[in-house]
Image 1 (spheres, rainbow, N blue to C red):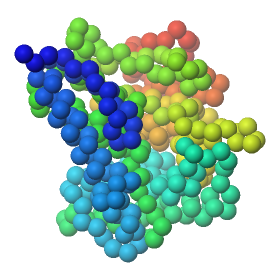
Image 2: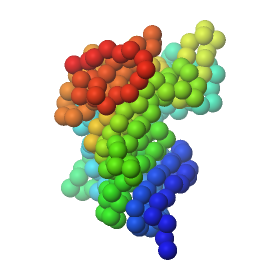
Image 3: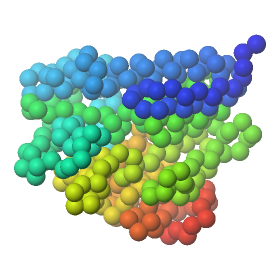
Amino acid sequence: MQCPDIQKSITCMDTAVSMRIHGQGAGCAYRKVKSELKRLEKLLSRFIYNSDISRINQAAGKSCVKISPETCGILSEAVRLSVITGGLFDITIASLVDLWNVKKSHCAPDEVDIRNTLSYVNYRDIIIDTDKGTAALNRPGQAIDLGGIGKGYAGDRCMKLLEENGIASAFVSIGGNVSTLGNNPNGHPWRVGIRHPRELNSLIGAVTVTGKSVVTSGDYERYFIDRDGIRRHHILSPITGYPVDSGLISVTVIHDNALTADALSTAIFTGGIEKGLGCLAHYKGAEAVLVDKDLRIYVTEGIRDYFITKLTYSKLG
């Protein structure tokens, strides 16, 4: 007889994925989700030679590329989010990501190189023809990176697939991007921890959610300290070309849609509190927990009753 509950951890999309799937048919649903994640990686990763995104990048400034309707939809949504956030979110940031190479570097690139590379970052240079099913980049040297939206989209796909397979209770974390389905098996909302941005193995708080996604962007995930003692983290500003310095060090967005939450967490982190709340206002039901450089916590009104912490915090909105 098939076990009704599944708890699994795998590596996919270049990150750790953990799943808790509850109910009859959990084993079958898990296998379908695992297969779906691998399919999405082959479709969307810029590091896989024949993926849709890789082929667009290879043809930058040369030609349009035939892509799947699914990729067309993701790119169209990414451009829409760029417009809404005033360019605080921009998937054409790949060349800048490669220049900084935060994962392996120990010093900042030359300022001239940063300025030159920044000139290739412009979401307006993404050309999408949904009727023909093609996409292109306007200039040679430009490149798309879906790191700020791909895991969110994958989370949404997982939830849809689980629901279609009769699952009513599930928790999926893709590199810390959490998507939930229903409540946990005991009937209570899922409790999702928010990592403390400066203390290892510690939480700054948690949120309780039912069927929502919880996505956090922070300066603590990948970074190095340069020779001047400056923390150079992996979230780069499409406005300045440097690691974001907006006064925020952690942004958590709670929303029904993980793709939206993924992009918004990046945009708010980049724009800071005032601009970030302006972005958040475009999405009904979207809430946020923000932490600034002084470890002050700010919580939007709609999530206050669902935010758990022993620390003091201020209300936003």
